[in-house]
Image (cartoon, rainbow, N blue to C red; front, side, top):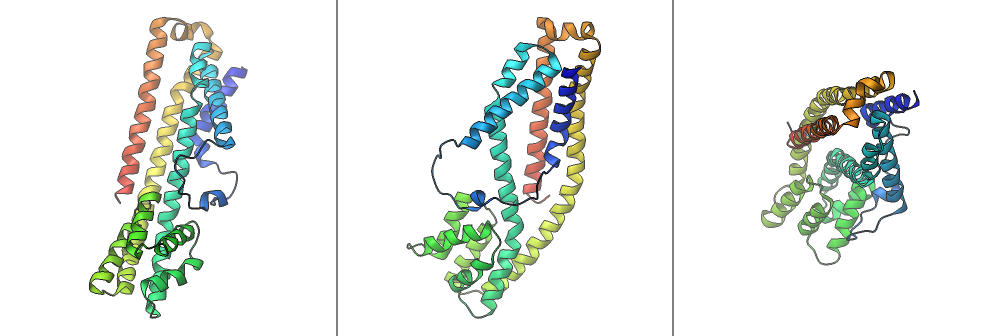
Length: 276
């Protein structure tokens, strides 16, 4: 019964865990800092996540199968949990930056309508920008003071941070430097375009989130049923976990379920990233 309970809790967390927030969504100070270090070493938090992920996956595998040879690979999979955690943090950071781009354009537009040139407008607007966008543009200003042009600084920071929205701003400033276009008008029209794009993406994301929840539920149900069947009738499920043929079928079925989830998520994320 304990194994069945642990299995039920594990499946529930796998299905709904990403939707449960124990604190308000915000960016921690350590995440807000613009970091240009190459190849940072592992922190104590990484070790904790790796160990907790390995124990969690091993516990889920043992709760479902009741066998050590399925639990051991789960215990050794903590690095995959760490990779997933870091990818999720990076996606959240990029999503937050993207949501702040309209505010950045609005700050620059207001400053340039006041008669400032792009560099003056950026210096005037940066202190009022939300974080972490403020830290990114502080880095842009720092690079302009070391010899880069404003367009070059924005482009180099874009490549390092992965904030692709900055591409439009670097092109606009490049045009301003070459032909002297009205940068305030460009910011205004860009802001309107991005507002429409984000509004459409929010509608699509709301519809997709429902399908994602259904996918998580359908992913967890087979393992839930197998675990309950093993708890209620061990003799019925014994051939699945204690014979070579049954173990192979269970392993391959699990692999295909996981791969299906991975490919589906990638398709959805790529579609949303292209503004579907």
